[in-house]
Length: 260
Image 1 (cartoon, rainbow, N blue to C red):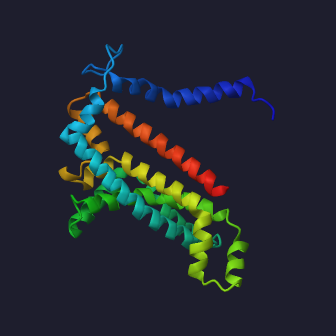
Image 2: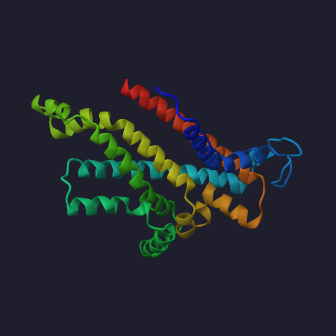
Image 3: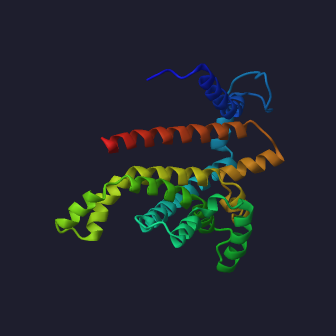
């Protein structure tokens, strides 16, 4: 393998620096003992992580994020997997392209537009200011990520394996359960991780459909920035990033084991 030219290495390093510089700048402030977000850091302390666990507002928001994230992950994974199976093997046509676009539409529609529409609709069905309403709203945004990942995984499955199982007398639901889904599991897991991350990071829809009792961690961070900026925001961001990296590592290890 030929080494990359210096220009490509420099360009790649510049892109990585551009993406990571804001994180590198904010994360050390999670360990400051000051009440202000400023450099140089006067001293190091874990007080802001303790506040995340002891302050009622932060503790409740973390609990709400886990509830909403778990519900969103489960619902989006099931719906996205079913949608991917339905779209699998269809010929490229105008109708197929339209249906596929409908599945991916929430990825490009502004969240404010979705938020206003959901607020009006949820008010009619009694879902406003409820956990179920927030989960449904987050699921709308998370399903496209599941569809993309599962569809890519299904495209890599050799259809002859399923045909062989069917030729031996396996019913369609048995082939699905014992052959198709296990082979597509890496994509399903990846889609579930993206769904959880999407729910964890969503603010705009939460502002429209959630009430005070459903305030998530992302919404709490947004409110804290507007009302009273403190290093607790940096501590929450550190937890966000560390948790995302940990989940990503676990998924990578799981996918490698699944492929072996």
